[in-house]
Image (tube, rainbow, N blue to C red; front, top):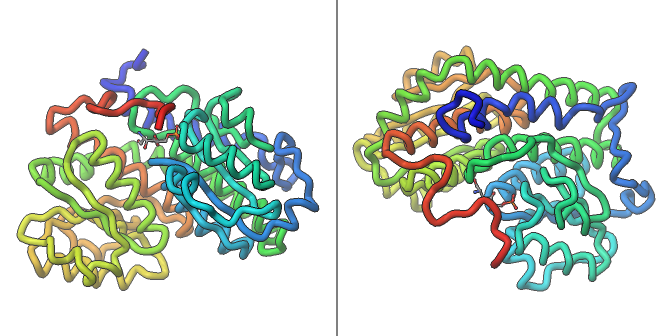
Amino acid sequence: EKGGYPDFMLKEIYEEPRTIRDTLAGRMVNGHLQFDELALNYDELAAIDRVYIIACGTSYHAGLIAKNLIEAWSRIPCEVEVASEFRYRNPIVTPSTLVVAVSQSGETADTLAAVRDARIKGAKVFGITNVVGSPLARESDGVIYIKANKEIAVAATKSFLGQVAALTLLAMLLGQLRGGLTTAQIRMLFRELADTAQQIEQILADTDTIEAAALACKDAQNALFIGRGIGSTICYEGALKLKEISYLHAEAYAAGEMKHGPIALIDPGFPVIVVATKSPTYDKVISNIQECKARGALVVAIATEGDEEIKKHADYVIYIPKVRDCFSAITASVPLQLFARSIALARGCDVDQPRNLAKSVTVE
Ligand code: M6R
């Protein structure tokens, strides 16, 4: 069943390029985005004045990435909230709110409860899920399926990438409706999004540095993941993956927050994993790395291919192909998943079935 792989997690990471391709298949026809199954009422969509993305765990992190894209391309205010918080307060939800519920399983109790509340308040609900016929699919006004096939490892990997791809398509659609993106821009973005499949293959073809960095960090008690912009959102997912399967305590921070507290943690050998891809805030991230290095941190950087400069600052540099900043959410997540897995294995953990966790959380 594992198809020759030692564990499901690795098998599922290797299925990521296919997940991207399958999730995008049929979505661009004659140069136009296709979402027939959303039963879109364009007047209703045009009236949307707020988007809420609700989800739990890894799916919530996919939402954090999408918020950046939705606001950039459509200029519609977008909030992302964990479903267990959303459902127990009184969020501002009206008939002109679009709620996007993200759940791999489509059966997470808190996410479903939040969807039900939102519908009572008249919101339009779109579900993003991997499971056809799941409660989320049934209870939403429209669904975008991610085509990840069955995911068995408790740690979400390929489904996360599928979610990010599907949410990117939704952000493009909203951008088109609001005039924030031209047809030509949408075609270009779609092509670049599709190219990430091949870029992931490139990352998977050489994982030696990821392994070496993982071995250097395996005996740590704590680790910090930092980045800025899209990079910070990737860090939240990288840290979750590491704690979930290796039981190594990890925190993620927006790098700009370091001086407001977390830098006090750094002492010699403290692992700091930095998403330092070429982005508008690259120079600021380099300064953050220098501040960590000055205090003896062991720095592992995820960087853009061709960036030689960063070798001066980091102990390990994991290169990924050059992509538009927003698509680094997809490519940079892959080495972070592999990094977590390698540390977990080096610490003797069962990567597919971590203690205390279930694949679907169908009770609160
Ligand atoms: O099925 P869902 O996407 O609703 O699940 C949400 C979380 O339980 C899930 O993402 C969890 O955080 C994963 N184990 C993370 O790898």
